[in-house]
Length: 302
Image (cartoon, rainbow, N blue to C red; front, top):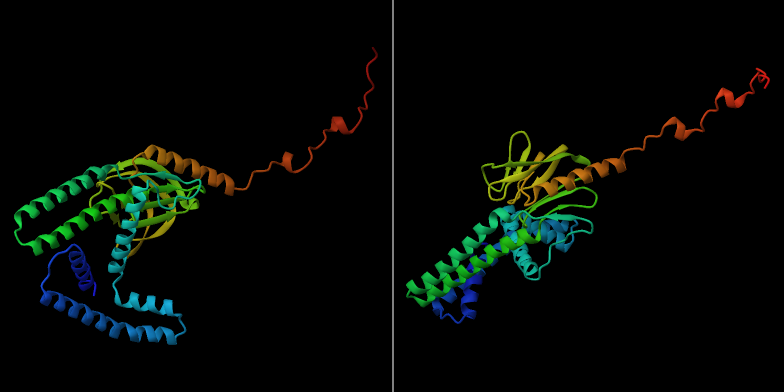
C-alpha cells in the first residue's frame, strides 16, 4: 500500500501537469491501486471489528487497526514529512513552532546549513541537466516531479530544524529537538549540571552509548553536555525507545545555553528547597539575665 499510493500521487501530478500518459498505463495503475486498497480492507476489517467488540470507539478502533498493519517506522516517516511541510510554511511566515511563554530558544542549525544549501544547489543542477539530456517527455516529466519534490523535502527538513529549536523553558526544563524527527524533555528537577563540551561523535543523528550517554549530533558535533540525576525516556526517529542519563547536543551558542540551564537549575532548586529557619527567626529572642533581673549590687556613690 505504501509503495503504490506514492506512485499514484506522482501519476496524478503528471496528469495535472499535462503529461500524456498511455491509457494502458493508467488502467493498469488504477487496477493496482484498487486491488491494494481492497486487500488492505480485507486485512484491517477483522482488526477493526475486534476492537469495536472490545468496546473501543470508532476512531480508536480504526487507529488501532492502522497501528497493527502499518509499521511504526513508516508511520513516523509519514508524520515527519507532513510536519516538515508544515514547518516550511512557518519558515516562510518567519514563525516558530510552539514556543511557550518564558521559554528561551537555542538554534542548532549552523553546522548543517551549508550542507543543506549544497544539496539544494546540486538537486537544481541535476534537474536542469536531466531536462536537457533525457529525450522522452514522459520520463522527463516524472523525473521533474520527483526532483522538485526532493528539493522541497530538503528545504522542509531545514525549515523544521529552524522552526523547532532547543528550548530552556520557564521552569528550567530542557527540551531537545531535531526538526520533527526527535523530541526529548528533561525536567528541571533531574538536571544536575551543564557545561560547554565540544565533541565529534561518530554514528548517525541519535547515538546512545552503553553507559547511557545520548549524542544528538548536528554536523557530526555536539557542544553542550548535561548531566542528569536519573535517566529520561525518549523515542528514536524511527520509533525505537531508549533512555539516557547524560545528554550531549549541539547549540549554536553553547555558552548561552549552559548559562540558561545553570541559572534555571539553581532557581528551581532554590524554589523547591525548604527555606532554612534559624532559631532566632522561629522563636522570640531569649532575654539575657541582665535584662530580666535587676542588679543586686548597689550603684557606687558618685
